[in-house]
Image (cartoon, rainbow, N blue to C red; front, side):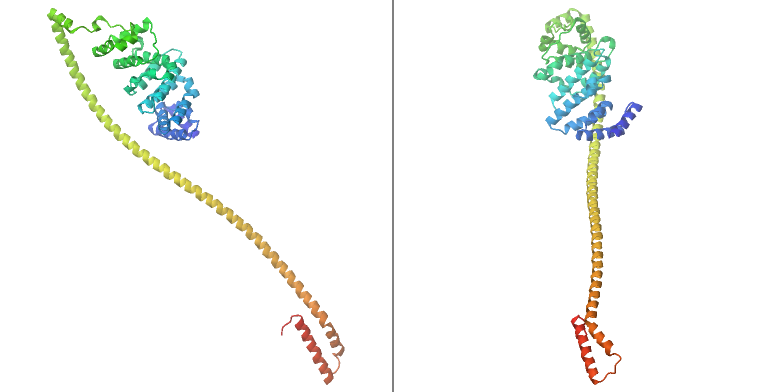
Length: 427
């Protein structure tokens, strides 16, 4: 697997990013390795693009119970690559991970823990403070991408986060209120959201005059409705005190005073009418733009659902193929085991056959020897018993046979047959 991961990493270096096909391949490999608790994969979660690495890590986390999920998140945060944060790789991945943990309802505490440690690592490893890269990553990967409900979290309820608040405050404040010379476009509604979120911090961080001047320069350009929310929020005023002061033109006035001012000067009234008409035109244009955006959003949402459905279908097919492949592999392994058993049995049978063949040959040889020995003994015994008759025959063979000799010969022949019968010869 390491060879496959290195090949994908080389492709990424060559082309600056992976293709969708290679990205999917990495997700499959990394998810499998995470499920197998293979420590090697964490190195590549920081090497391969976060859009693929964090997706596979989130897939894995969603399959775990709370204790195991917490353990895996902690392991991620303890990786050397995370602590080094080379080129802000840890910052980008940490922001995405924290965001997706919250967006996919995997736990507020877990999301805050990742965010806190990510901000701390980013500040500690940066030689230039909250630079433009940190601001871009934080704004794009978290501020505008996280579910807005995140900014409703009452931070003071989570004691463990207190040690990280100073880092979170520094990064998020400089992200939504960057130095003016950076010339970064920041949506004012997120500036207000972050300020409201800061109210829930247990620790209040004092800002110097330069920092407050920078924030006020942004607030001056806010739409009137946002200014009104800010300056009429008693809690906000209580938190920030004199840090954020509305200009006279931004302060709410009594309705009766406004009416008096209007009718004291007709020209002012006419100017206001013209301004209202201009604003009305602007709102009509904005409404049309909003309708167009809403229509596009509806289209993209429908397309997204189609893609999501197709993706689930393909994932199910892949899971079925993996399952079928696994069954086939198990069958092959079983057949291989049975085959090895049969080979062993055949080997044993062959050895027994050779052993029994030798035994048969030995028995046959012994049988021949015994047979020969028995025959030779029989011959000797028979020869010994008939020898006396043979000598008598030698003595009289040249004599003429008369009646008495014939009788004697009959008796001798009879005795010979009786002797043969005794030795087992059958007639």
